[in-house]
Length: 180
Image 1 (tube, rainbow, N blue to C red):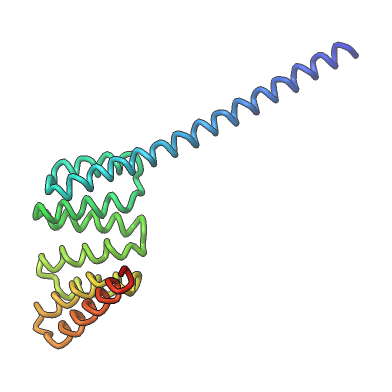
Image 2 (image 1 turned 135 degrees about the horizontal axis):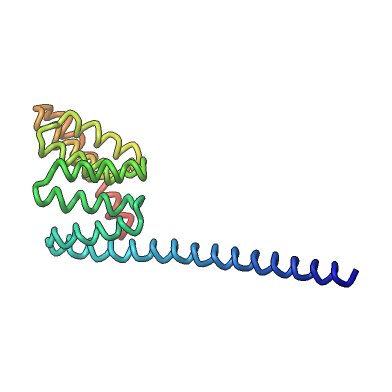
């Protein structure tokens, strides 16, 4: 009986040790995931700083690192798209906006930025559709109304363009009044 109790105690100890080891491993994995997300955000912030400095290649490199650490980081894809657009790489920009939208389907800014690239490519009808999606997800998005107006104007739809410009101005005025 003593022998059975000793064996049972050993088995229980091993089970407890294994459970503790599994819990510790899960904790380490959670910390790693958290650390990768923090690294992704930091590299994205660095990329955004380079973007503001108009150092597009450096910005893209940092957005790529952010994406490596967090492959679903929609904001990094969107920002990379902006840098590519500014370099005139419109099709690559569109690909990155598409990835941003894939990871965050209601990402109004990505729809709007994709619309800008489409307008530059001469795809004004598609740009208007994208602006409408941006407005759907962010109804008080002045920039999307402005970009929709620009695409409408390029299509010769000046009355509709002016209406969208007016909406953009009203939205901005409300925003300014709200901040004051």
